[in-house]
Length: 325
Image (cartoon, rainbow, N blue to C red; front, side):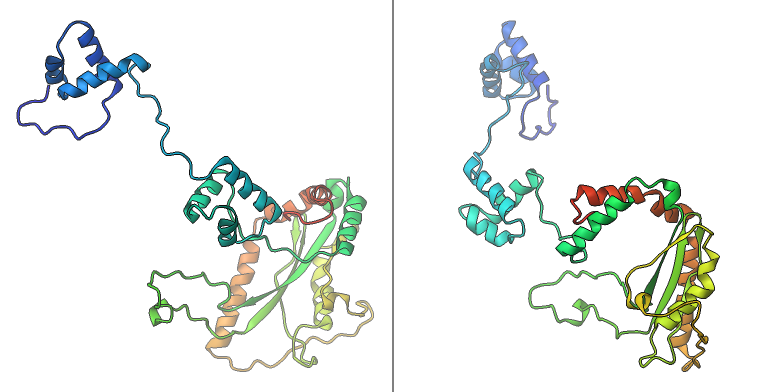
């Protein structure tokens, strides 16, 4: 019973325990008015509880049906078929074609409940039928190779790092029409000087992260096949063994018609100009990149050799087309 002066409980559904006490007290002949005073309920509430107890289980209210769904089973099937036929359809067009009698949020909630969301397409290199055929031949050729065989491989590649590249995308709260306010702009810095690096690794072995200087004899002063061959001659032997297999991609400097063993190559030493803050920042960036390369755990690099059979299986399972690798 509610003490005098105590606030009345907010309106809400009476608990099953309280309903059971009301029903039990009434079955023992206690009047509704007395039950209402004991349980701090209204007299009409106690009467309704006792009346509804006949079609309840343990005085628990059955689940209410709620509002009927706005999307009929036919609407749902139409949405599903449209998505299967046109997976890249826009949300506006899907709403217009399949459920214009409802709201866009209704369609969104139905798709989310069905486990369907719109995702950004995965970025993959463009593959032609010829590419797919070569991928299948590669998978068939190397299927079943032992882990020890894959451990013989040595991979290498180049990477260009640019100052100021890769900054986080900024988001801003604003109103419509405020897009060009100074505080709502993410200023894009001018293109900065970039630096190219080379590195190679295999199972249990890695080279240094090598700075690839530009070719002073080249027209634009960039990295050419001469620079690439020089790097290979100096650093590739540090990771090779008698039975190693060297892998590289089809970059133009890799396919240039140069003979490593016969070419006479002079090391390029261009004079450094502008040894100011810009060059100091570039030197610091190079140092950071080399330190980051050295901190990579060997287990991370070894995963490539250990998991090559999975890549072969993925190409075969994808019927020579795109995989997650």
